[in-house]
Image (cartoon, rainbow, N blue to C red; front, side, top):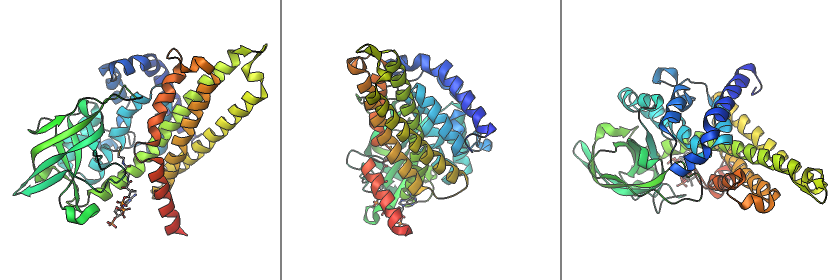
Length: 379
Ligand code: COS
């Protein structure tokens, strides 16, 4: 299916865009800490922010196989650039699309698709990472309003965003069933953003805390139903994890390309490294794992497009692909020897960018528990 004419055309177009528009800026994106406005505008124009979002809200409704292709191709050029694409298509866009009122979709989703507004998904807290249901951000009802206090941590693009979908406990005694999501605009009194974190990789997308101090929001800013936001977050993460897996595939492809290019030209002991069988064994193992990840990812994407539940498939794809891209990036760096440790070679950045993928949108260990739960339920 991914070799059909339709998907081949999409891949060719995105690959060309990544090569012409993104790759030449990859280093400067890291240095400036964000993608240039012009690139952001071009991404919006190409509808990369709405691959999974229907046309009526400004997307192109091309589905998850197409989304995986877009992610894979863009990630080959710049992982930071893909972070601007994941949020509108999954963590931010899907809750608004699937649970928002028409008014909320018009006000928040449509401008995001056009690249006129940026938003983010604020679930994680300093002490609620893997244990996402134990929210310490509290929303206290006050007539038609809620007063929200708390701190959200490691929030993607927080310094750039106009609004956030913030998760908060409206009834702590109910645990996962007492969590509600609110759309909160950045200029609401009491909403502030922390200093951008100093990160190991993906430095072209700023990450920061969102601090909420007596933030007063009207009940019309609730996204979905009161107390139902945890399930909403989990369902959204199923799609998010699939898209991160495709990002990992692009990272691994980039690492392979660097490794192959290097071992072909580097000569030691009178021969190119590529002529040594030990090196060939390494490349063979790397390529085999990459192909396994590709199969898992596109199988999950086809199932998602067919309307199936992909909790297990998305977790397995992200678990395998993120571990795989770290292994391949590490081996590709190893094949470069000391040169790979130098910032002059792209593999140094690829290696650092890969590292976060086994952590965000569910650590490998959490994904193992998700997969195990599904396996035990289904047999
Ligand atoms: N789809 C729909 N509903 C889901 C779901 C899914 N994939 N996963 C869980 N739920 C529902 C459960 O059915 C349950 O609903 P009921 O209360 O109606 O029974 C509810 O959510 C609570 O589920 P569970 O008991 O499994 O919750 P836990 O607190 O044990 O947490 C994990 C489950 C650990 C899997 C979850 O907290 C998680 O994914 N943590 C990682 C968070 C993460 O990825 N953070 C990254 C932030 S975004 S960068």
